[in-house]
Image (cartoon, rainbow, N blue to C red; front, top):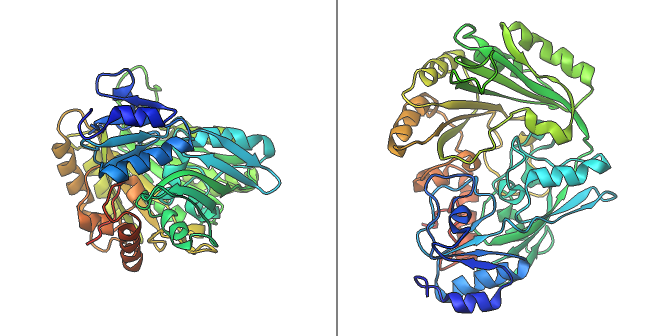
Amino acid sequence: MAGMIDVTTLRDEVHGQVLLPGDAGFDAACGGFQLLDPHRPDAVLAAADEHDVRVAVTFAADRGVPLAVQATGHGRNVGLDGGLLLSTGALTEVRVDPAARTAWVSAGATWRQVIDATAPYGLAPLSGSFPALGAVSYTLGGGIGLLSRRYGFAADHVRQLDVVTPDGRLRHATADTEPDLYWGLRGGGGNLGVVTGMRIGLLPVDRVHGGSLAFDVDKNPDVLAGWWRWTRTLPDEMTSAVGMLGYPDLPMFPAGLRGRNIAKLQLCWCGPAEAGERLIAPLRELGECVQDTVGELPYTESGSIFAEPERAHPYRSSPVLVSDLDADRLDALRRDATTASVLCVVGIRHLGGAMARPPQVPNAVGHRDAEYLVTVLSPVDSDPEAVTAVHRRLMAPWQPGAVGRPLNFSFGPLAPDQLRAGFEDGDGRRLAELRARFDPRQVLRPHHPVPTA
């Protein structure tokens, strides 16, 4: 026995490994990419196939054992305390149908695996800025990607989801079959069941024009406001963002960046390269560019645009969706973030375009009217509450008039009102009703549990 779990029975029924505390691989399975507040289950089931997922869900539901699911472990907010952790990281199959421009993506596949599988056909998924991220979990939360202003949210391109609901049934959710599940899983997160795979539409994209322009913001304090003004008249083919952080003065970083507070303008244009260069040209006039990586690149190298760190680490973040920016708040954010007592990575993403338009089949993705996403993220060395206090101060000016909260970018414990802010009011109520219907005993422990009361 391990806590409430009869491990012998579970092992007899599954093809994958059942790990207990102290077993090799247990700690790695509990941690994942996000090392802060790891899961502390009684046991881990490393699923080998869809059968194991069904066994795990049925096993937990029959015994009233809490069940959490983890693939790559990027988006965890609060770790599971006891119960069963279902690891889907080994379910990595990707099948491409080039004629239909679709791909079947299993629960543990990363965007890197999907990108590599689709590239030979001149196709691409609506992947995010970090290819190592789990494709299914990203999409269940909506999915803001490198091509989203042109094509919308990743959830808008889902054709089918296979999901094991807490009653142990494997359901095939499409617009015509299981329409409630199909609506709620696309943007509603993991509240309704455990998704074993999804069929997604692919895009006719094999190359993009993109990269980053880096500026020293102490010497060029108008860079953030200049980028904001530039975004106001862009065509949908341009998706862009700003990432700002202070680089330590260490030899592992490029000479032009280390020891400086740097703002990187991150750019992805999915049109003719010449037109993209003309659009980008005004940004190069915002000041002295200390690093310029913009150019034409295959979509397989799209992760280089944001160039996010691939090493697992503990972190917290605080995001907000807003209808607009302004120069004064941007300048205050630049000043306060670069002088904060903890390292703060500021991210601002330009939304709108196709993300503002409803998909052909409605889904639970909320706040499509938001024009910008503002995020502060910090690594956590020892005191999470100190980081939270700094984030609260930096984000306070953005709260009045905020449109909502993007749950995919929220890393840390959330109060019920913060969880509700992830959805439109009516959608939040509908999701709560569906959660009560499909998981009345709340066996599932999703990353962002929709409040049911």
